[in-house]
Every structure is written in C-alpha cells, then in structure tokens.
Length: 125
Image 1 (cartoon, rainbow, N blue to C red):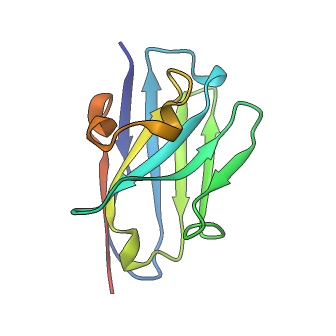
Image 2: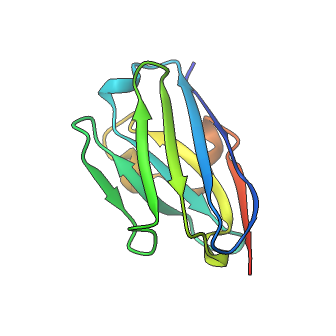
C-alpha cells in the first residue's frame, strides 16, 4: 500500500526555518511527480511546490525564493526546505505523489490525508 509519512513540522518564530521530510513507500518513487500541499484552518488547500521526474520544480508565488523542494531517490524521501517563514505559512503540510494523472493539480482538499497524516507547521509573529 502507498504510504507517505511526513515529519519535520513544528513551531517557529517568523523568519525561522524548518525542513519537512516525507518518507514514501508502496510505489516506484522516482517515476512519479511529487508535491507538497498545505491547508490552514478555514482555508482551501493549496499546492505549495511540485517536483517533476525530470527535476523541474514549481512553486506557489508566495513561497518562491523561500522554499526549496528536493528528493532523494535512494532513500525515497521528499523534502521541503522552508526559510524565512511567515505567519501565513502556518498550516498542515502534506506530501503527495502523482499516483494518477492530474492528482497534484486536482485532488480535493478532503483527500489530502489519504496516504499520510501531514505535519503541522506553526509560525508565530
């Protein structure tokens, strides 16, 4: 079964950094695009960053220049380095895999936790 185990969240002050990790299993890691989503209470979820199998990356405008997505195909781990954190980055962060065409672009918010529990990031002013 597909499992995505997120870790690395926590509470930091504005300007701080965190590195999220996602241990993936149950599928061939290096042949699928991967991404990070987040959802804050009362808000719609949003795709934060995506990494393609060719190494190409995409970032939400509000995090570009502050966040860096990467992956280790030996350990099947996805990362999100988050620097210069802002209070508006507070959310539960989920990693996802393009398990079917269009998943990363269209997954309903209520399905974010289907394969993993997410990790809470809290940024205080």
